Length: 209
Image (cartoon, rainbow, N blue to C red; front, side, top):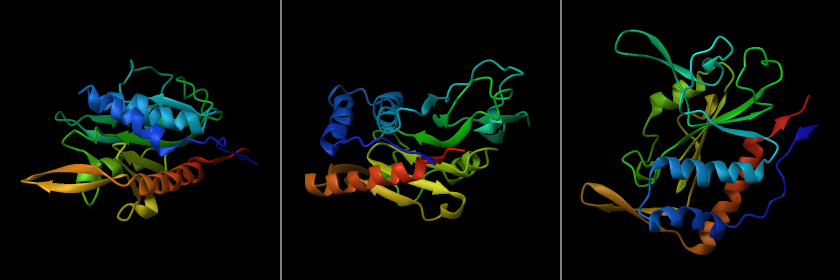
């Protein structure tokens, strides 16, 4: 038995309105795309899932293990630290994830970038941060990672590190040393968006035991 996504008719036009709001307001901070575009879309597709902002670490506690969903890095003092993703997609989430370990199903993590930031994904032919993706995939209970700036989505597993499946709604245009973009035609973008929704439903579905 599968815990499936709902049959929700979300159009590319609606999705683009979420993005355009922040472009129009000149407020293209990453947090806006994280909460009001990416998180919003996943919650619409999977209302029974827990779509959790985990980018900001809470207080250290004996009841919480960051490494269940976070990779590791070594700081300047040689100390091992968790490198948290922006969003965790889970089922039966509980912050006390040590004592509730057997109840929680970890589905995927999502790394979000602003399309107007230096690390915008659509600007690069390959992943800007391969080390970051590898760290996210090294988490104890995570084997799926999504990387997105809302203009483009990339899907990573251990078997698809070098050749992730991609879905993009913009054409990249070279300007001097940098890039700008133009939206693809409405018909093409809608077709690509439909493919993205199908991929999300397949990628994030879990088997209910």
